[in-house]
Length: 116
Length: 113
Image (cartoon, rainbow over all chains, first blue to last red; front, top):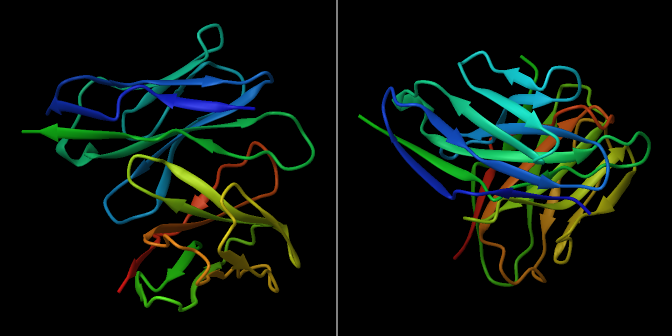
């Protein structure tokens, strides 16, 4: 069975400060990892994903996440946040085994609040 | 533009009433999903469908029903057997491959009158 733990339910930060949203997972098999962002009263949007290859993945709006297999982590970082980054962020994991149905497991979410 | 359309955005249900939430996608995706979102609990899977005319229960299927008669449509019925239906419901779709991300609609917020 797989699980995802987002270590912080809320992260307050000032505008232009750096931020890290932490995500740890547990799995007995290889995994694919995703970060999604949800703005108020909207659905989830894919922010970035790790499938294979380079362990550092980047989004078009300045976020990046690093897959660390030994620490089973996939933390999300941004060097300088904007007010518009205020949203809820979800980490998700699925099995990388082919065939059958691989359920996407979500963390409980981290609410990022950027203050001026 | 391709995407997923959920309707209505807000829905109210009376006690003992069934209600149906609509989900339509024009992405030509094989798989579709329904999730329930409650504050502080992330997303929980209600039902999923990997192909037309087939669907499977997720983690919290009790009190819900679905159908998948067309590839682009996956409606969810919240029945009177669901005792705590107030939540935000999200529909998603994806290609039926384990490395494919899911695409989400904008959700339907269901409340009890």
